[in-house]
Length: 226
Image (cartoon, rainbow, N blue to C red; front, side):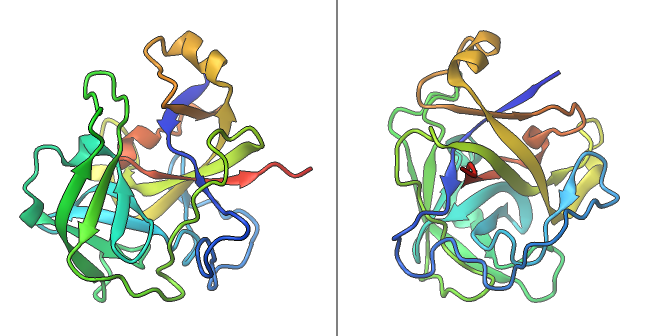
């Protein structure tokens, strides 16, 4: 069965501001399979734009660094939480590390057409209380140079969360990743009849992968090799 995830495509872009999308501490290595069922452990520095959004020091959602002030995340994650309880953890794969960089959240901006029932326009921005200082493990993502990913076909979904859907005690504090492929919108709409044009489909031919257990993970794309 092909598992679909409705996601936002974020990727490397040429000609962008210096630093965005760079991974100075990460070297391409052979894919390392971990003991995690249905998932892989991300390498240190592999996704330096990935952040953990937390309430009272507990991870509940993922986000992506856009610039020194703003974090991109899902609107459905934060609707019922007071802003003063939220914080963003940056620059780490391990949420149990004794040296975490934490930024309080000062404000939240929700897409004004977000619809919880259909999950349309499921986008929000978090503003941190003080500017983010970039380094080799904290880097902003590059936004895609084109509105539709016609030249993209492979990507990664990354985040923290449960390793099995039925076991809430399986919460993994190390950053996980899963390889995905982008699915044609029309094909996806045959399965998900409520899919809107604001949504992108990605999936993998493996039933053990389930990004929905990871709390709004980030999707990171790459160009098809010509």
